[in-house]
Structure formats: C-alpha cells, structure tokens
Length: 204
Image (cartoon, rainbow, N blue to C red; front, side, top):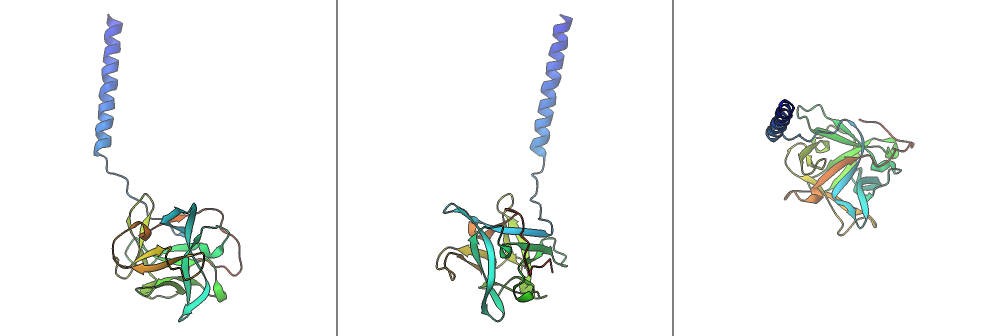
C-alpha cells in the first residue's frame, strides 16, 4: 500500500509539473524575427522561390540604364555569380534596421549599391544619398522582409515581376507603393560559397 501511494504521489507531481510547463509556454512571448548581421548574402524573392521549379535572386550587371546607373533584376540563383552577392551593412542611422546593400562585383573598378528613384530600382556608385538607404521592414515569414526605401521607412518597397522583362531570361525588379504582397518580401540566403573574382569588393 505504501509503495502504491508513493507511486500515485510521484505521478501527481509529474502531472502538475507538466501543467506548469504548459502554462508557462502559453504565456511566453513569441520569438521576434532577428535582423540579419552585417555580411554577404544572396537575396531571394519570396514569391519567386520555386517559381517554375527555380529560385530567383536579386542580381545586377554592367548594363548602363542612364545617369551612371546599372540594371537590377531577378535571375536564377547561382552562388557562382559574383553579382548575386550583396553586402548588407548597417547605416549610421539610429534605426536598427537601416541598411545599405553593396554589390560584390566592382564593375569598372567602382563599388555599386542598390538604389532607386521612386519607380526604378538600380545600382549606383556608393553615395550618402538617402535613396541608397533601405529599411528591413516588417517580417512576413520567418526570414522574409520588405526592403523599404529608408528615407521614408514606409514606401516604396522593392518588388519584382516576371511580366515584360527588360532583359530576356530575367524578371523585372522595381519599387512600388501599395499592398504588401509576396513579391515585396525578400530573404537573405547563402545558397553556396561566395566566389572569388576580380575586381570584387567589400562593404562600403
């Protein structure tokens, strides 16, 4: 009898401990999405991850689209392509999520970073212009975030579309106001090893 009572007390204690653990979990605050550290990343569009069985990344090249700016677009992710790697670097802004995105490929021996003019997205040479600052806006998924123009903090957002591409075999990348749809969300990824190349740079 004494043994049976001891077992019943042990079982009751274990049950109470389980309830206490569940109550604690129920009151716990959900984990917040962590802002990525400074470093080299490939940037995947959430909507075009798996589109036509491929994953598409933010890319650029030396095509001059006017006023010493270069085209940006989505292309099939390939970690061996230097221009698909971007250095995400915190600005000196007091905002914890204000960043520059510097491209790895130094076209013309110059350092290029993501910029925009309210309609088009492109790369331009490193500058202190507010148009070169981006905010890692609200998270839509575990890691997907909007890239929002930094000087406003709300609009416009970087987006993409497979319609009417400027460069055959790629998708358009541009900035736009409006709804926060899947095309507005981007993820930092490392889908392989960053290649060596020349000339290639570091953060600004």
